Image (tube, rainbow over all chains, first blue to last red; front, side, top):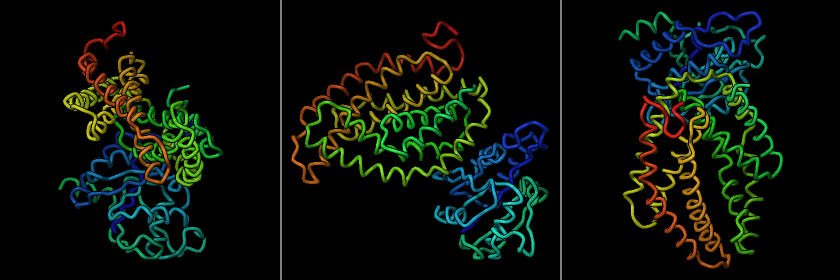
Amino acid sequence: MELWLVRHADAGAPLPGAEDDARALTPRGRRQCFRIVRALAHLGAGLDHVRHSPLLRAVQTAEALVPALSAHGTTAVDGGLARAPDHALVARLAAEGVERMAIVGHEPWLGALAFWLASGWSAEAPERQPAWLELEKGGVLQLTGTLASGEMRLRAVYPRRALRLLARG
Amino acid sequence: MPKSRLRTRELRSLAARACIRRDPDAVHELRRTASRLAARLALGGQRVLRDDLRWLRRSVAEARDLDVLLARDDVEPSLAAWLEREREAEQGRLVERLDLARSEALAEALERLPDPDDDAARRALAELSRRARHAGDDFARTTGADETVRVSAHRLRRRLRRLRHALEWSDVHCEPVRVAQDDLGRVCDDALLARTLERARSSGLSVEPACHLERAIEAGLERARGRWPALRAHLTALASTDGPWPDDGGR
């Protein structure tokens, strides 16, 4: 399968006293989303499923990915994407049984999940992890293979700059 | 408190109540609240979270159907006992399906959504009205009461329900839509009982055939067709994105 890990787009900096979970995308973040969708279209990634965290910035990023969904594509919210990844999350993602899935989440958990799927080093014990992956906001990682610990291959990293170029076609 | 937050609180508590024990009111209100929140997403033109709300509604759909049948006073005792056993078994399946972690994540996501802006909501209401009108035109062209006609009536009922909840959310007069939805609801409930009778008979239960129900369904469908032109005119007025809303004092 193809798995696209998308870090939520720009939502500004957390403000003192404001609820961090309710931070909305900025206009810049919305432009980043637009480029992700254009880039995914350019890469021929018609998505079967979009899974996203319940935090507002991830919900809004997932909403922006809707044009990349295939005609019968579905979306689902998953609280497991707003915390460190665990076996239950990986099992739920695998149970979806689709060929092309995008996951919209947050750092450091998205990078930990990618590292886990590609290397087999469990993200449940981050102190023993020998290396880290970290996505910038509005960045995308592509993995291929079977959705299980150590069974996926890191195929490509698309930082915002690359997405901007791809979006131009 | 904003409406979204209030409804989301209800969603949380109703999902928990429906799981803890057999609670027909909680199941009914959970489906209704999920439907209202789906209408709110439609008003904001949002696609994400609709599948989750659909999942929530479907998780309790079978239990709700059985509760509706058990609440009727025209169900013979042997069928009532059979329905009772089915509902008891369904409670276990409902608890398995109704994953509380997913409904909690859904509630978290919903309560943070900003309210839809008025212009977008107005355009969405017009679109929902057009969709209901389209389903109604299809239904009005049917004759008789066979399965395809019932499917068409059910589709119209669903679209009217979505429109009604969106109108209620926007504080726009919705009485004609509500009345039509309730009328079709009674027909669909009779059709549900007729199907359930067949299922019970095929599982070996000795119950009377559903002749009186078939007559009631035919009459109900005919009545709904007769009332369609007036409802259509109302939907046409709602489908206009400019000018005052119909029958609401021009607010």
